[in-house]
Length: 59
Image (cartoon, rainbow, N blue to C red; front, side, top):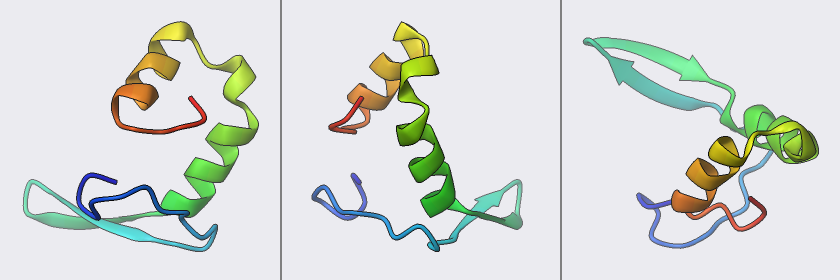
């Protein structure tokens, strides 16, 4: 969200490439967001606070 400058809806099929220690890894960001949002009632207060700090409006 910070990279894009505004809140955007991430399509469920979106895959984000992340480089860790020089190796590129693909993460299914859209699936993760969708699943996390659906299961938000099971997240701890700390997890919700961390998401809120990142700008996630439903956290």
